[in-house]
Each structure stands twice: as structure tokens, then as C-alpha cells.
Image (spheres, rainbow, N blue to C red):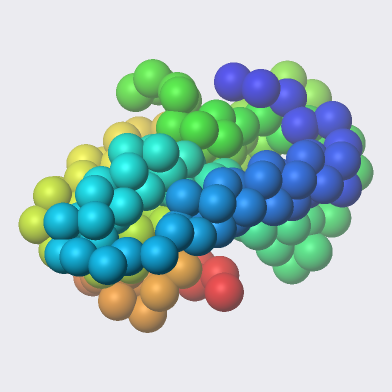
Length: 169
């Protein structure tokens, strides 16, 4: 896991990545399309170039939003050290976000930037919530949409999990 030493600096870095990413999309799509074949070729190129980064940047952003919410509304202890896996690089023992106070894990959080809990996303949510529930500290699950938030709350309730689900806009 990576340590977050300065939230504002981390957010500036993310903003820079977002700006470069959107610029890349503009450059890839700034071509006249005169046939279906050209249009499909352009879409394929866009998907190849941006698909993974699109998911990862949105995930990273949601984790940072969750961290800011935790700092503002849940924990106000400045001694908490924050660690994260911004690009979903952790293993099964690591959450997306971890708060440590005096060497003890006090927060474990996961984030899903998916829009709808359908198919694989729904089963992945279940697996993530079960993994999160076994982690130390207070547990949080961050989502961006009403559909994802409601589905996560239903899974938490139905499985008796000790996880707070929070929708972040």
C-alpha cells in the first residue's frame, strides 16, 4: 500500500492525471468520421487507449473523496496515517484505503466506481464486502450511485455485515 502523506498534493496529482486523460480522449476523438467503419475503428481505438485508465482514475478519485469525508465527518484525529491502493493493486488482505492510528488499523475501506450492480459487478461487490468485513477497524464501502449504494446496503443487511455504506457524489 502507498502512504498518503498530503491529501491536497495527492488530489493535485489526480487532477493533473484527469486533465491529461481527458485531453487524450479529445485527441483520439478529434477526427472526422465519414463511414461506419471509420467510426467503429475510432471507438475501438478509444476503448483500447483509455478503458483501463478510465476505470482506475474514477476508482482513485472515489477513494480520495471517501478519505476527505472520513476526515471531515467521521474522524478528526490528525495522527491517523493513511495508506491506499489507488489503482486496485492490493491483494486480498489489503483494502483500497486504510487508516492507522498508533500502529493499529482503525479504518478499512473499499470503493466501487461502477455505476450499476449488474452481472459480474454484483458478484464482485459481494466478494468485496465479505473481504472487507473480515478486515480490522471500522469498515466503510464507498459508492457513487444510488443503485450501487442501495445494493451494497442490502448485501450488508442480508449478510449481517458490520460495514457502513456511504454514497459520495
